[in-house]
Length: 219
Ligand code: TYD
Image 1 (cartoon, rainbow, N blue to C red):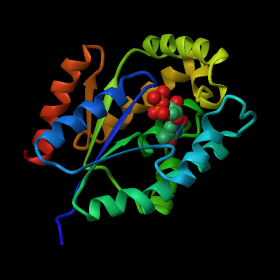
Image 2 (cartoon, rainbow, N blue to C red; image 1 turned 45 degrees about the vertical axis):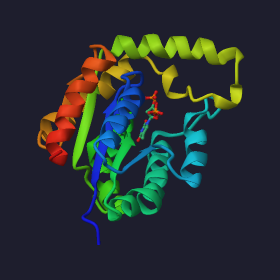
Image 3 (cartoon, rainbow, N blue to C red; image 1 turned 60 degrees about the vertical axis):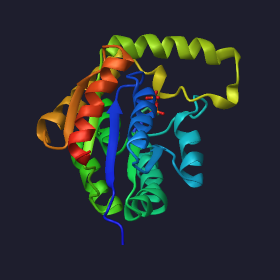
């Protein structure tokens, strides 16, 4: 049986460059001969992608914060069962775009549900699965607001079926609470969570991440 793989998660505000960094890291790791699985939340499975559409489409209105949190966990429980655990059992390195820290930051912090229900649900529904390493891409709340404005403009006229803007319509105070909640998680779990400054060029940020991951995977 292969040794268990490693579970790496990427967190940060919308527009912090997670997708770019995950793609660059995957290329770097594959070049070293590592088997990589890239996935994301909400989503990552057929059921999860349906839940994602409900959660992110700006036509979805009136979701209570608790419903939002429950749907995030419904997507996650299926994702762990169908994708993450099988990939880890095969010895693969899983790069996951968002995980439970997102729920703690957005629903716990942004929506003010607090940390406790998130950690409880994680224990009950996700068997408390912990990433081996979490990269928190930290940037200014302003960068998120600017990107959200650009995206909202772009999506107004084009491809309404690809609308994933519900969270991007939130205000500065919301994203400020999300960022503070992220930094609190990093302060609480410094062994797992590495804060990476995302304000440099994608190349500079990639070099920092590659080094952290190389150490963790002993490459
Ligand atoms: P994502 O596709 O990563 O968006 P972006 O590329 O803009 O960072 O995530 C979609 C949105 O879902 C994002 O605004 C954060 C939100 N989200 C939560 O609120 N809670 C969660 O648990 C997760 C996984 C995502």
